[in-house]
Length: 124
Image (tube, rainbow, N blue to C red; front, side, top):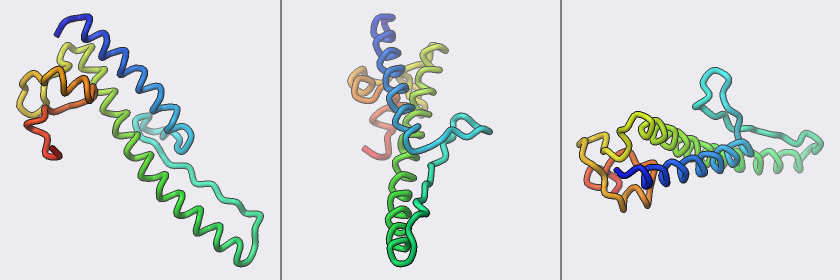
């Protein structure tokens, strides 16, 4: 892959990494043991009592469930971006992890953190 194209992918990945990290920090905290892992933050409003408190807890639990799903998806995307950046440094970026073939440029333009080619992707 040409250096100019590789530099463009690296820049795009680094920008996306910053954006995703900022989004994750709104709903999760990095694990102290493993910085690649994120733990969703659960906040509770303990000012209410009685039926209002029960309704608030239900709303909070529902919001927490949604945040868990979002945080998991963002953390996985961030992990894939970090792997892609490591591959750029190692000189292996753009090769499918499954079949070891070069991925089409269109695939990488659409999904620069892609780890497998379209042919090997079971989600296609």
